[in-house]
Image (cartoon, rainbow, N blue to C red; front, side, top):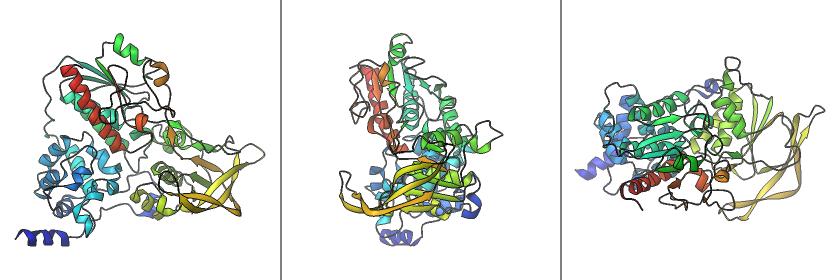
Length: 472
């Protein structure tokens, strides 16, 4: 009987989430996927085999009990499902939308060995969205107050995880954010059509209901230092989760021309400062007839798709490797292609060309071929002699990564950094060499994913709680 049940489950095809048509969404900033209705969510949940040794959980950086919450969905117990998720993940509506599930939970799914994996991310999103519209969901349990105070620097996914975990353990938590809204990269980096800001705001409001305090417009390292938080403000521990927000550039001639943006600035203006709704919001943003975005990660996809929505019809992705090496999520690449983005694979920029007024008008590209693997394991791109072309470009967006901003580290004595400026911290606990200070996420590892930052926050929260409870 059990074997027959498994076979029956495997025969149910993966349910496709409804989404906006490409020709419509390429000109609006509304969310692209529309979410599962209840009946599709329950049908998709029925595909889960409830494995005794769930490999999907091993693939989740925060160890959500995936089979347990999916089983609740299958039974129609959506309240039970969200409570199960909240045991490990404080912001499932975010993770369900932007996590690279294909490389983590879904990539390990046993169903995916012979069929398409269970749509774990879509089910997580469904549960979180359902819970957001309810008025009677019980709050997660919060332990007795300990009287201990923790400062969290940065309100991105790592900082929010630390805050959510420690507030439940009874500690007082204040999150300090440099921008005017909490959410970190979730609000300044990810576009509205991929992660609506109302979703992030709801997750932050949920934490406020649990007791987390948010202090915005506070640049720790300048407005106040880490040592002042510890010595003058009475915090018992500090977690640094400021991300990697210092943009990298191509370092080629012409990069100082007008019309050349870092992806950080371009997306921050659009996402956090609502430039896409100018003049309703008073933040302007340059648009272009011929847009070139340099890079192949999720940030590049966000910049490409944003510029298309800003009115450009000629939008190119310039990437020095092949399509197989693109590091962006498969869903983002697929959506970009559907929306009309043109990909120039195996091309590397040589120089930007300006007009008589100092604005970029073209870019010179070197055609490449793949050689032997480099240190990352990917085949190294090498120039093809004599193969250079020039393409029109009146708006260039550089999305080739970001580095460590030194604002915090340069004003914090005793905090070790490596040669790239990232904070040196224990990989599992986030503990730094400076007493009472922990760190995690991109400021330790370099630019990575939302859920990996959350996983680092989970380990740090456990370590901070142990210190606050027992001492060294």
